[in-house]
Image 1 (tube, rainbow, N blue to C red):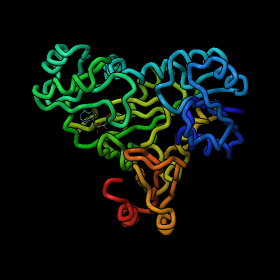
Image 2 (spheres, protein in one colour):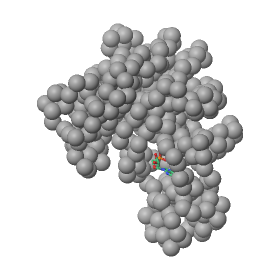
Image 3 (cartoon, rainbow, N blue to C red):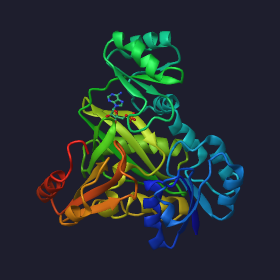
Image 4 (cartoon, rainbow, N blue to C red):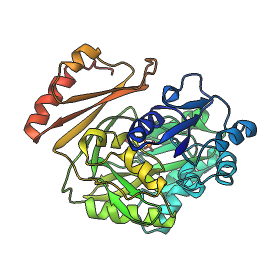
Amino acid sequence: MKIGILGAGQLGRMLALAGYPLGFEFAFLDPAAEACAAPLGERQRADYQDRDALEQFCAGIDLATFEFENVPEAAAAFVAARVPLLPAPQALTAGQDRLGEKQMFESLGIPVPKFAAVDSREGLDTAAQHTGLPAVLKTRRMGYDGKGQRVLRSASEFDAAWDALGGQPLILEAFVPFEREVSCLAVRGRDGAMRFYPLVQNVHRNGILRTARPRAGDALQTLAEQYATRVLQHLDYAGVLAFEFFVAGGSLLANEIAPRVHNSGHWSIEGAECSQFENHLRAIAGLPLGGTALRGTCAMVNFIGTAPPLEALAALDGVHVHLYGKLPKPQRKIGHATVTAADDQALETRLAALQALLREDD
Ligand code: AMP
């Protein structure tokens, strides 16, 4: 079976790496000069709006998926009319607009921080009356890794925030003084079967994920699974979906979903019975889903901007290195390591050895 992937970044790369042992082949479409999945399959370098390129992409594959949520709607519809595209385009639409996403959560009875649409400078004042301050002003579309966001603590900051972000649809959200951030990695097969990974505790800095640590037995596991189930069923979803939550007042507030494999699930390559990447492929190919239980204990650390020398990383026991083949650049995810251990104490020791190699600004 040949699977086409829209996007050829590190997620596409890890999907292909998980798929070759199953006998799958891969093709990618991505306009970027640097596309780190390109060595792992046929790669067409073309714009997502290029109909000839899309036609050619579809001609050579049995089924298609995507590795990023900002695939243009028209491109998704074009592909879906020719080969099965999974998850289906409605999942893309649901995740592309922060406002529509929050409204969907509300309609499914999933708690969210207070929010309001902002379409004008005056609208920002009105929205802030609803959300209160502090609040976070975000672009509704195309934001990722904290880009296109401003925290507003007083009305005196509104003009500058509007100057920086205005002129495009925005959303204002109440700032959540969260106790922690967690994500639920869920997978649903074409037959409707579902599995859930243990809740992952995530730490961000400057809006970028730094570490992700799954823990079995989190008190909020069942609630997160219930919320994820509502979204999966509502979207008639096939594949892996990541659901990010704030934990506040001991309960969950929905932040956002990503209709794809997710950085907070990378640990599953070595740390789970079946990785998020293999499970995504199983789900879209109509295979039975793999086990989501932990194998021992683990944590993932991102390499942001730079990575420690491979020789130093390779000298550490239980540190599984993934370098994406991307050029180092400030604030850019260029790789990660998953640290595995038999128990929490051994994990702490190994994590400390890894942290000692990371630079302060990494
Ligand atoms: P997002 O792209 O919306 O996931 O935002 C990136 C990160 O910014 C989140 O993981 C949080 O750490 C922080 N953040 C975003 N929205 C809020 C909020 N409403 N309250 C507090 N922190 C937030």
